[in-house]
Structures are given as C-alpha cells and as structure tokens.
Image 1 (tube, rainbow, N blue to C red):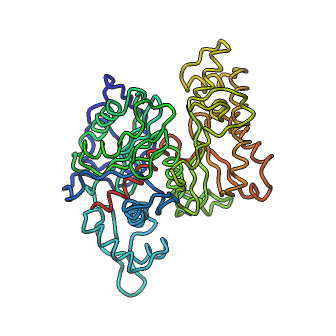
Image 2 (cartoon, rainbow, N blue to C red):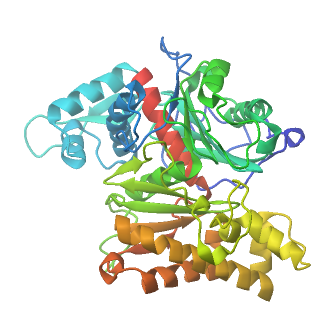
Image 3 (cartoon, rainbow, N blue to C red):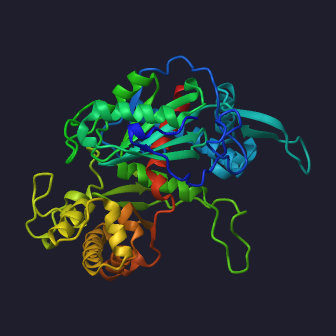
Length: 470
C-alpha cells in the first residue's frame, strides 16, 4: 500500500490497536502489521444491485424513533441481525448455530436462515465440526477471508478520521486526514474518496461492500443529506449519500457524528470483555457481557453534541435533531452570539472553537484544538479554568437530560473528554444536580472507543446496508 500522500493532506497515524488482522494477501509489504488472530477481507465479486444505493442511517437494529420510516429502516433492522451474527462469530463468542441462537436470543430457525444467507454471500464459511459431548457435532462457523470490507469516515470541521473495517465491523486500520469542510461538499468528498483509495491499498476495489460517512451536522432521515448545518457552508441539503453512491457504485450511509459515536461506543462496549474481578475470575479471556441499553454519548470537541441510544436503539427524533445540545440556550452563557444565528447557546461556552477564541482574546497563543490540551497539560491557569468552566456548564445542562432519560451510562468523547479538569467538572455537576436514583448506578466515563467511535458506528450502519445488499 502506498503511504498516505502528504500532498493530499493525509497524515498517517499510529495504528489504533486493530481489532482484526489483515490477511497476508491484503497487506502491502512494510505498510501494515496484522495484529491478533485472523479474519479479514479480500477480493470478492460484486453482487448485482449494489450500485446506486444511498441511505441515511438509523439505529442499532431498528427505526431509532425517527419520524420517517422507510425501506432503508427495514433493511437496517434486517442487517442488524446479520451483523450481530458476524460479530459473534468473529469474536469467538458463538461459532455454531445453536450457540448463536442462545447467545443472541434468536429463534433457531432465524439463525439458520441468516447463516445460510451469509454463507451463500461468501461472508461466512463452515470449517469442520466442533467437539461434542454427545449427539451430532456442531458445524463451526468462521468469517471468510476475502469476504469483503467496509470503508468509513467521520468528518470534523478541520479533519477526518478514515477507517477500513472487516465484515464483522471490527477495525482493521485507520488514519487521519486534514481537511476543511468549509471548502464545500464536492471537493471534500473527492478528497475523502482519494484517501480511502490509499487506505485500501492492495485490497481490490470490488472487495469494498459499502461506505459510511458521519458528518458534524443534522442529517436528514429521508435523504442522507445534511440539513441546515451551522458551520458547513455549501452543504445544506447536498445529497452526500447519493453523491458517494454514484461516485463509487456502492451503498452509502450518512449519519450525524454524535449519533455514529454513540453507536460505535455501544459496539465497543458490547464486544469488550468484562473487567477482571479481584479474584481474577474474569477479564480478557471472558466473553463480552454486552453494552448498556441506554446510553448518552456526549461529543465535546470543536462543537458539542449528543447521541442517544435508548433500549438498545439509536434515537434520532422526528427530524433527526435529537441530542442537539450545542444550540440549547443556557442563561449562564450570557448573550454570546452563536454561529447558528441565535445567542446564548451552550456551544458558545463548551465548544472548543469558542474556547480557543476566548483564550486568544486573553493573549494566549491557541489556534488548534490540540493547543487546548497542550495548555491544560502544561498547567496553564487560564486555560484550565476555562476548560473547567465549560465542564461545569455542560454537566449542569446534562443533568436535566439524565433525570429525564435515566440512562445506564454517560460517555464523554471528543478532545475535551481527554482533559481531566473537564471530565471531573462534568461528573461533579451530574452528581450534584441529578436525582439520587438517576446517578445511583450511573456510569460516567470517557469513551472506550476513543477516536474511533465515529468510524465504528457509521461503519456498523454501512455494514448492515451491505449485508442487505448481498
């Protein structure tokens, strides 16, 4: 694989613990080091009917509460069952039909049908028989090397995270791309396609089953387009999904970034082994216990946003605006103008771009989001105070949401979530202002998926569409 080109502002990043290895035939010599034990994807023939499909994305297995249901929602639900089977097989949690039915709570007939479809599509294969204590040995299932892959991207205002995932939805490799969404949709998306091609490297183009993109703005449930974004000139109602689908001849999924991060976090938590007990009875070798059914994922970066997973499904609201914390008007912000055209929005205190502007107004050199982290890490008093104030106000605002929704977990992601003064301030305000029952068992923690939450989430949604298109 050729290195990501500096001329296109693609910056290769230290690989983020690939969950799934790359088969030898995928990897160009000297570029990617496989990690773990192995499945992956390689060349595959493209099934008929895949080109020209674009979808806005829904939740982790259902309509996600969107007011606009349609064929793509039904496809997502069907794809969710198959993607759960693939993830269980890839992780080793369940490698035969009977165990899949038991672990996933599915009818044996449903598992038989879905497994048959995945085998026929070349994504799953049977590999001998498992040992049995009696009766007929069960046929062992595994992912097919060469079964396909997914390309995903999460766009911020000045960067993108791009990733290659296998057909279980597990991360193979990822990289960062410097870009400016203000350049407009067509040049940005073309740059993204070029970066994907370079990330794909030796993997044949027809091995890619689908693509997914998470965007920093409200995404229409019907069209897969950004609707009235605050800081994305030229993107309003641009058909991102249709454009990518036509450009690549693949199913293309588009989702809001915070929603994608929420789903990605649930995916990461669902596949993570339980923490080790004091007596050492659980840990890395134990099976996954499943993620929280009700989760608030708060993205605190250049802007602030929130994704909601309720009863295991992504909740997006009637017009896909659920979780838009950035433009909640909060009295404590004063009358500061927001880029949405209103005044006093939460984003004017919590958003990283506004924090940078405040620091510069005080004579501090701060131009990039990483400058905030650097200043806080160096113990700069003004930066630390400003970040702590942002955390307090976010925690106060979230308190009403936590009381209303009563989630199992509040997960903090984005750059600010890596700063302890910010996280501590959010946590203290939630405990201080929420009802005791709301916080009694509440988990308040930093993202387990980290920088890959967005690509894992939108990649999972793209995987579901790909499965339905097989």
